[in-house]
Length: 109
Image 1 (cartoon, rainbow, N blue to C red):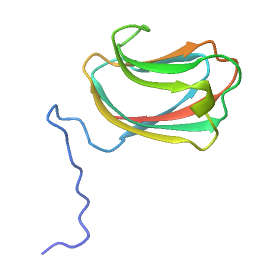
Image 2: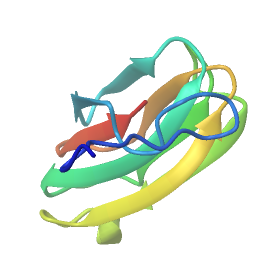
Image 3: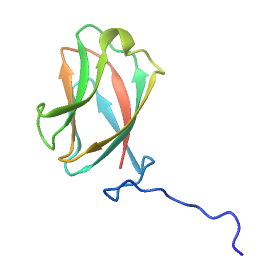
């Protein structure tokens, strides 16, 4: 019998239920993933400055569609961790809503 096996759990759409990839996102936002997947975790690495916040959409290339997560200015503190675990049927797009500073690491599959 094998011991110490690594097991990866998958959701109903076939995407890993744990972050398979991580990408840094600056306050400017942009495409996280341009195809279907799963938004799993967001870590604020540099605190947000003035502005409203950042919003993640279920969209491959634009700030529209279903909102997956919004992190407002006051909640964008360095070290804050957001566990989302939501499917993104079209892709994942991060849109800046007036921030002038802040950085994130986004975990997705």
